[in-house]
Every structure is written in C-alpha cells, then in structure tokens.
Amino acid sequence: MTAPNDDHAVEFREASATVGKRTLWRDVSLSVSRGEFVALLGPNGVGKTILLKVILGLVPLAEGEVSVLGLSPREARSRIGYLPQARAFDQSVRVRGLDLVRLGLDGDRWGIPFVATRRPRSREGDGAGRVREVIELVGASAYAKRPIGSLSGGEQQRLLIAQAIVHRPELLLLDEPLASLDYPNQMAITALVGSISREEHMTVVMVTHDVNPIIGHAQKLIYIARQGVVSGTPGEILTGPVLSRIYGSPVEVHHTAGGRILVVGEPEGRPAELTFEGESLSGDEDEHECCEHPR
View 1 (cartoon, rainbow, N blue to C red):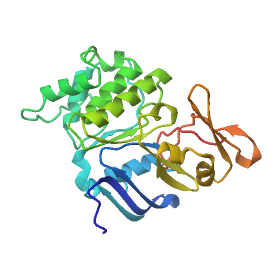
View 2 (cartoon, rainbow, N blue to C red):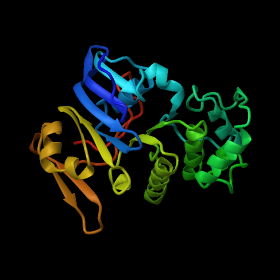
View 3 (cartoon, one colour):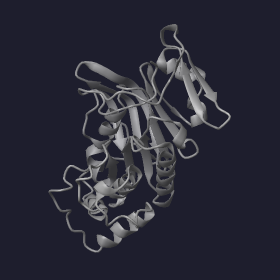
View 4 (cartoon, helix red, strand yellow):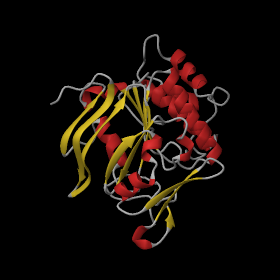
C-alpha cells in the first residue's frame, strides 16, 4: 500500500466501489486535507453514502486504496464522528436531548439505534463537562433537557451534531444533515458545521442535496455522477463543462440575482431543471439519498 500523505485526512487512490455486480464509481483518486470542510454532492444511486461507509471501514473497496487520518479505515474508526441520515424523532420519544448527546461519548458507536436501550460508557474526567461544552457549542443549551421528540427538526439536528462531536473526533462525516429542514434552518446548520470545523480543528465531509446552503462555507466539493467523480473548489466544479462531462449530458449553471445557483440539464434533449429533490432508494445501492438530478 502507498504511504499516506500526513496532510490528508482522507485519501483515495485509484479506488472503485461496487454493490452486487454494479460498479458505483471507479478509478477515483482524490483527497481531503486536514481541517477542510468538504461537501459531497451527486444524483441518486451514485454512491455518496457508500463513499462515507468506505471511509468508516464498513464497506470494502473493490479496487484501489483508501487511508483515513493516515491509517486504514478500521484503525481510524474511533477518531471519526458520524451522523447517518435519519428521520426526525417522533413526539413519543421522551429521551432528553442531553442524554442523546451523552451517548456519543462512545467514539466507536454511531447513530441513534441504542437511544432507549443502553447507557454510554463512563469517561473519567471528560463526561458531563464535555457534554455541556458541545451543547453550548451547537447553541442547544436552552432546550437540551427537553424530550428530543418535542423539539423542532433544526433543534434535533443540532443535538445530533453535538452527539457526533462530543468524543472529539478528528474527522466528522454527515449524511444529509439538511434533509427535511427549511432553507433558513439549512443555512443555520451549515454555518454551525463550518464554525465547528474551524473551532474544533475538525475535518468535515457532508453529503447534501442542495449546493446553495453550503456555498460560502465548504472549501471543496466532491461531485459524483454517472460518468465520473470530480473534486475541487466550488468555482472549479460548478461549471457547465465540468457537470456536463460527469453527467454525460448538457448541463448549464446559472447564478440568480438573489445569489442562488441554478443547475439546468437537458437529458435526452428535454430541458429540465436539476431539482434538489429525489425519491428514496431501496436495496443496497445508496441508502436514503436525495439529490439534484436530471429528470
């Protein structure tokens, strides 16, 4: 295996991923620098969630190599914070936000399936104080003692982010943290993640279905489409020629007077806006993704 670059939090080298007999992406070589805030975009079913799961060591590569924090994904696992895509908590969930955050002290456990059934391992000298610290950091102190099911979607997402960072990870992976939020909350959560990246010196890779909330915060984009994977600054990636190449059909990028970015494609000769909505997928390809895609 090629020696990893110490400046890179994540590095893929000639990597390919398959699900069943289907290749999602191939010959991918890209890197995420330490401390960078990176947004991961692309249409349904192209393998964005799979890419996160490769970084987590949950899915092996079919070909190529990947290093995470200078280690193999499995070796780096305890140094990663992860927020999987999830639906909002039902009002019947009575667990306090404070207790949900405390569950994140187990750095080798991710997500929320155990919220009602287990207690976090004790951490000497770094438990309650750290929980209070991250709750304040995400701006959730006013409602952290309330049942999680009684909170709004934006409030729940702030506490879930606090859970993901409470054990001080070096790398934070967020899968669709803006899903089901209105635009003001999307902007607020993205600004929060950018602030966490800076203040906690944390590398962030965030899957999102809309590029607009992350412009001004993400330093790099990784864009996956049917014909390939590209990475670079937003200015380098969000161009008609680049997106046309990886979509395999004509794509135009427009900037509105209000500062929004509008991506328009012409699949099979029929003009269509590349919307920021998509259906959920079933099967093993890419779980619960929605993203801009030609219709």
